[in-house]
Image (cartoon, rainbow, N blue to C red; front, side, top):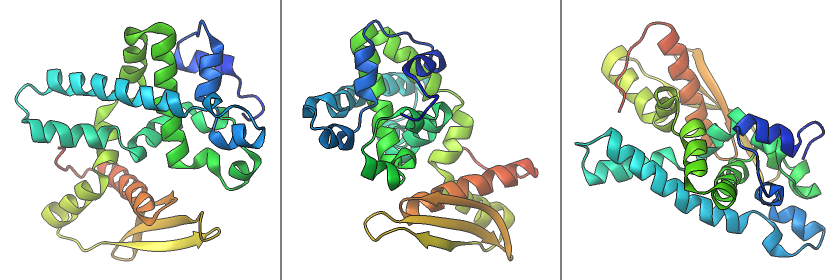
Length: 237
C-alpha cells in the first residue's frame, strides 16, 4: 500500500465503511505479500476473489436480464463475459486507483504489479467478496452498480473497442488502419507492450499492456474516443 493510500481513504472512495476492516485489508493483500512475510496463505485475497467473482456474475446477470428483456441467452452470456473480463475489471479499477492500495511483495512491486491487469482485476473481485461478507448482497450490489455497471456507454466502447474500431474504419470511414508496436520492454516473463493505432500515417491512440492484445485494446479505445470527439458515429452493440 503506497504512502497516502489508506483503508479509510479507499472506504471513502467506494462509499462503504467496513464493520470488519480486516476483510478489506485481506482483499487488498496479494499472495506475494503473504509469501514474503510467511503469513498464512488464507490471509491473501484469493478466497475473497473466488466469492466476489460469483457475486459479480449474479449481479451482472440480473442487470442484463432486466435491462435487455428481448436479448437471447447466447448474447446475454457474451455481453456478460465482456463486461466482467480481466481487462474490463482492470479498467474499472483504475477509477479507484485500486492498485495503489494493494499490499504487494517487493518483487511484485518492482515489476509493476500495481498496474498489472490480472492483479487489479482480481482485487476488484476480492473487494466485492469482502463487501458481501461484511454488508450482505445489497451492499455488494450497490458497489457493483456504481463502479462496474455505471457509465456503460464509455465502458462498452472499451469492452468492444477492437471490433468497434474495425467496424467504424471498414463500414463508415472506408480507411485502412493498423496496430503498430511502439515499444517492448521488461524481462521475458514480465513484458510491457506499447501499441499505437495508425491511420494514414497519423496516430489515433496509443495503449500499454502486459500483452499485445491488452495494449491493442487500450489503443483502440483511445482511438475511438478521439474519433468520437471529432464527430464520427459508430454502432454500439
